Amino acid sequence: LQLEMDLRRALAQQEFVLYFQPKLDAVSGALTGAEALIRWRDPRHGLIPPNRFIPVAEEAGLIEPIGQWVLSEACRQLLRWQALGVAGLSLAVNVSARQFKQADFVASTEALVRAGGVAPALIELELTESMLMSDAGQTAEKLHELKALGFSIAIDDFGTGFSSLHYLRHFPVDVLKIDQSFVREMFDDAAALAIIDAVIALANALGMGSVAEGVETEAQRATLREHGCRTVQGYLIARPMPSDEFVGWARAYR
Ligand code: G
Ligand code: G
Ligand code: MN
Ligand code: NA
Figure 1 (tube, protein in one colour):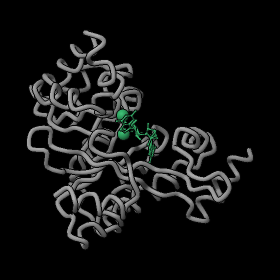
Figure 2 (cartoon, rainbow, N blue to C red):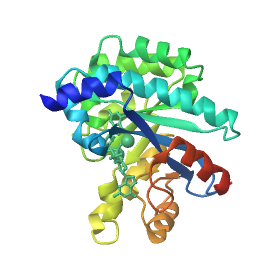
Figure 3 (cartoon, helix red, strand yellow):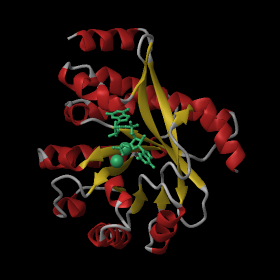
């Protein structure tokens, strides 16, 4: 309850901040985009990671306003980057299950991005498998509406939820994000590498993009590239960082 009150205050006092982690084209190495990851700068406890407060925010009904803040702030930062010469990037934003379930999710997302002055094509919405599996009818409709508006749809942590390959045929998915647990174990567990291989093949065959997360070593990156993975993200390239640091990083990288 204390945490819930603190979260309300955090929202009111603008204590949330977005960090950004770069995503690279696995073949050319070009910087193609970033993932926005929320943190809470608590005046007493310092920087708090999302795993510690997103579940509470969901329980407390605070995830909608937080999700809306994330989208607005993501748009604001993307425009800033463009003004600072770091242009042509797409920005991935994590969406929580409860946020996506809201009846007005599509309308409110469109309104926020429009108000933010950003083309929906530059925003990639990261959804999880479990979100897509519950209430498949509603989900399909929402995804098609988001697609029609120009948003890009990624399935986050792919392979860790209750997947049905069925939905890959019926939902307009653009990108599969290979969960970092597979990447972490790719050289220790033959099954992990086999699954990575299968997911990349699936994405390529269906005309979808593939992102490997949690890439920490050159060996992982090289193997992912050899297996046809399109995009890489992880500490090897850079840790998630505040916006200004991201701009500096992007300039130095180019
Ligand atoms: O950044 P970090 O690795 O600590 O993120 C941990 C988890 O928090 C990840 O599952 C990530 O998807 C989630 N997360 C990060 N930022 C956001 C956000 O803005 N909204 C939601 N709903 N989840 C987020
Ligand atoms: O669930 P989601 O994919 O949104 O969560 C991404 C999380 O993974 C973030 O909390 C981010 O900080 C973390 N992360 C990003 N790159 C790496 C990495 O290379 N290694 C590890 N261990 N975690 C990472
Ligand atoms: Mn994510
Ligand atoms: Na993930």
